Length: 273
Ligand code: ADE
Image: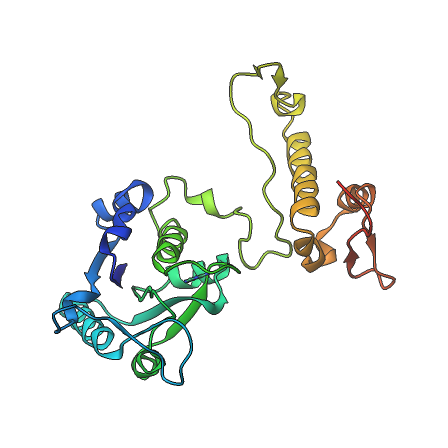
């Protein structure tokens, strides 16, 4: 997969040299190119922003540097044999970035990121490139960052670990929390490793019992408990046919009840942890 990032802070993308993404680059599974937007400015101050039309606070990133930088990155990519570029625009106004979006992006051969600073990029830039390629505006959460670079790091890591051969164990992401297409998306429960007792805290007995059925059931109960506590919205969204008798028992102990038609589970009211 080829990744291009156009930014005014190339050094912000240094973490792409480290850990999983860094190793994927070293192995040639990821070809990452970071471009300095200011390289495509032609005035003494390397200006990339200007005041917004219509007034208002803040500054807007100018069309010309973005257009020239993207044209150059795109031409370079095609020359290197990359095909079917997809533009990924990190912005708090975008669609939520979810595991499903990560899976869809991981199937693309070429992603071009445009992390913005200030109040964002002049709209005409996205309109122009949307005539040539798919454009995805994505938000990594309901908060406003100072710029899109941190979002690029987040998206890249989520996508890179899905690429074939990047994670050691092929099955590692099949049971991820939020794996798309599942009837239910439960959070993963707690995990433990040696020693068997640490500072008086023992590992739950069941995990050392060697009884695979009991271990699987315990893990599922813990996943249900954790999801009900931390992400009740995920329980509500589950297809209720995914819940077996024991699941229903656990949820009922946690104060959940089915809707009258039996289809949807209702989160407990007035229950404080
Ligand atoms: N840029 C600023 N805030 C952002 C967010 N929440 N997601 C993606 N890009 C952003």
